[in-house]
Length: 96
Length: 221
Image 1: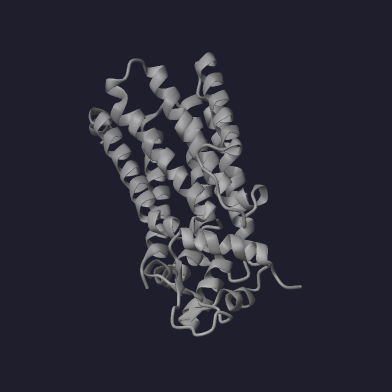
Image 2: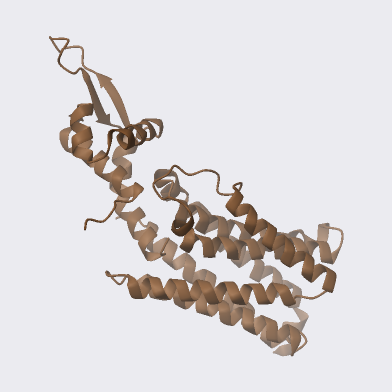
């Protein structure tokens, strides 16, 4: 049985997906995050609120059918990923 | 030697309090960034514990000359000390009572934490009305016995065997010993100076162990 991911781990996974793709469409991020649409929505609002990611609109897209919105990682998001190991180590070593 | 210690009793108390307050402030400030980035509730309760210890020591040893009466000061000190112990305990147990995937609410003003405030207030009132320290010592001995047992069982269950977890449970056992010695000094040795100095030293070692852990695991790689 697979272990349920903790909140911090989910955030790390979502941010890593954004970083790996440089910019990623919401639908692709939903699949990559492995979350239910409802949970995805909640996490994304939180990440935008915390300024870890931001939504960018690409005006170059020719057809209206093509998705114009992308998520990109912010400086704060990069910092979180860099410090994730430290946070994880701290939490595990203190049993928190 | 004993005479020298007796002559400088007040100075020793102030140095001791300043050392503990400095360590607590350092722990709270050093973990701020980790908390701000992660909003991890365990880190928050852990920080609250040291914030309460720091405030308690500040009231008892630094602010006391400016406050009206001894029992009022000691009651405030006791309240912060007992609540800090509860926060330390809850930092290890919070996942059993809260959903880690839900967004957190205030860590100081929520119904679960009010139970701690209420329990601390009851302990303080019992000691106040009986004019004793019995309930403070008893509560702290029980808390650190539980915290020690939980942290050690977490270490045993930990598959990666994080080394510091063992040191953490050792620090909790030291805290337990310090509280037992404190109780003995109070009830059997009528506040024997040597026993009190051993308690001070033990407490400084315990807080330094926490500080060592915080510095070790907040260092940038």
